[in-house]
Image 1 (cartoon, rainbow, N blue to C red):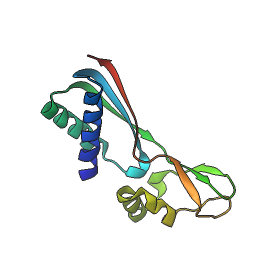
Image 2 (cartoon, rainbow, N blue to C red):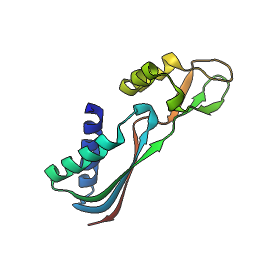
Image 3 (cartoon, one colour):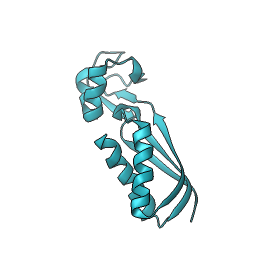
Image 4 (spheres, one colour):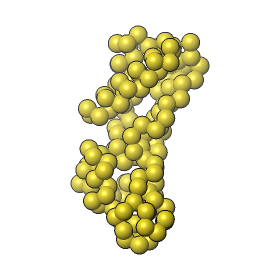
Length: 130
């Protein structure tokens, strides 16, 4: 829950830093590796917006699926995090770099890979703003 509130504050401060005081919609893309509770994030954005004097109509949270690329063989793959065991999801939620301890390239079995997509906050789009 702490992660959601910290991300919400970042989103609100980002929108305000653009000089925006009122928006019809704020859409954010969040990496699935973060295991963020969307309902809590939306609630936190709404509450913090009020506190900071920002009016937001709709808050949309879009999942960004994880994508990995092997440094050894160049293979690119994705994971369905709902198929990953709960303790692993929990570890990766708190520290996305823990992925290196749990996942391997499905092609060559190497643990030398990068997380290309699917972690953190990767995009904020503001529509209909003043």
